[in-house]
Amino acid sequence: MDFAASVTRRLAKVASPSSGTASKQLYFVGFLLTFTVIVSISHPEDVLTPAYLAALGVLALATALAFVAPWERLDTRLAALVPVLDIVAIALVRDLMRDSAVAISLLSFIPALWLVGRLRGRGAAIATLSVAALITVPSLMRAERIDSLILAHSLLLPFTVLQIGLLATGALKVLDAQARRMTATLQEKERLLESAAAGERLLENILDTVDVGIVVVDRDGHDLLMNRAQRRIHRLASPADIEDPDEAQLALRYPGTTCPIPPAERPVRRAVEQETFSNYVVTLGPSGGRSTDFSSSARQILDRHGDRDGAVVVFSDVTSYVEAARAQQRFVAAISHELRTPLTSVIGYLDLAREDPGLSEETRSHLGVANRNAEQLLAIVEDLLQDQVTRSASGGLTLRPHRLSTIAGQVVESASLRAQESGIRLVQELQETPEVPIDEHRITQALTNLLSNALKYTSRGGTVTMSSRLVEGALEIAVADTGIGMSDQEQANLFTDFYRTESARMSTIQGHGIGLAVTRRIVLEHGGQISVRSTPGAGSTFAIRLPLAAADSAV
Ligand code: ADP
Image 1 (cartoon, rainbow, N blue to C red):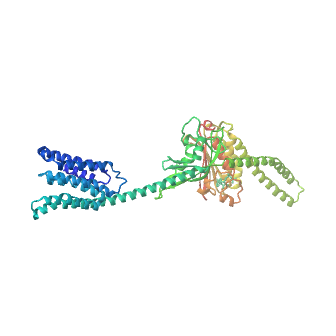
Image 2: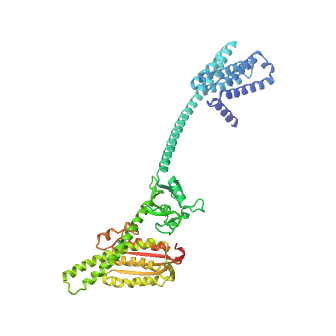
Image 3: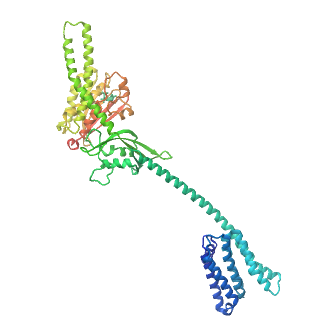
């Protein structure tokens, strides 16, 4: 079984068009010589004849041709010459091998398969004709008499060669068709790969040309792509002593502060956590050193089934805009400061003027309107100044041990008269908190902002509650109200400068959208966090959390 399989494999190799002429010839020579040597052991006289020497000569000629001729450049039809010469050699040797004549004739299958391998159907015809002309016809001519049995015997060889040739031709045609299909598939794949590679090169070039940093991460947060601008940004934020920092180790701060952004709030981490956001401004670079402001935006990438496949985050340098905005703020603050003194004086004199008993009711009323408007103007000026004070004081907190619960109590007390006038129930739920190092003035400012908002955005009959407690290793102060509330979308932009919700803008409630931004900066400077929970029409709760060791985390 194994022998048959190995012979089949060898014959297939001989027939294979990929096998070279020289190697095929060597294979055949080896086969023929081995066979004749075995026969000559018992009949040496058979091989030492002119016919055998002639056969060797023909073999030598065929072998020389197989080695010397430049087959790759010659017409494939010429390659038929070598196997036909082999059939001549078989014919010469066959006549010497009386008893083994039939067996040696079978060797002609080898050149026949070779011819089929080269020339397919034409090869089968050449092999059949060669065998018939070189072996069958001469042996018939040498026969003493020709009867139907001898004729049938003689025709058996060319007939078998023809059958094997046709079978091999059919099999090779199937293989040819398969090979053509495979070649076509491979070429198509190569073309697709080439066009994909060209597309990738184009994309890389485009990405490297834009000056916006782009980073693409897979669903587990591993970097898939980072363009040149992003690599530069990464280097900018890399601490000098860390070779290849991950995002958590990069120097990233809240803009306008020295306060590092906690890892969970960093842009790429937020994107990996499936958030989509726009215009999230962060400051890169060590505090005290050269720093750059970047606006970051993130979008989720979906695969063709709509499942999340990763995220893309872009960073654009907004330092010049931020600088311009800060310059504008400084300018506004300077102007406000200049306005405050004369305004205070105007209000004072208006108050004095209104006290004059000789005034007519109408003039008194006019002065009242002027006074209210001047007061309102002063409130705006003070808000703007407050913001400036907080910004310029970044990093310069005056920390002393204080109880947050005590400060919260004082803030509630100051607001109680206003709450009473507005018909709002003001509730204190203050658990005493331990003393921690904080800037009393700024924390008072932050809590006053939250409480005054709660009173402002709650209508008569509502309730505002100030509470304090210890929670998860932090101090929490919460201001809850039963006021107008906010939608999720409104909450997302809440701590941005000059932002006011749609409902606040539409109402008659006065405001400038500065208080919460200031409050957030104060909280961040203390190493804390501020959060909001709100439902439109039901109310809002603002919560400030400061670490118990506020002084250690404040930078
Ligand atoms: P403003 O001077 O407008 O109150 P803030 O920065 O303090 O400025 O607040 C920004 C905006 O947030 C407000 O205009 C309002 O739309 C919304 N807001 C703040 N606090 C509350 C609250 N307790 N209830 C509902 N909306 C609030």
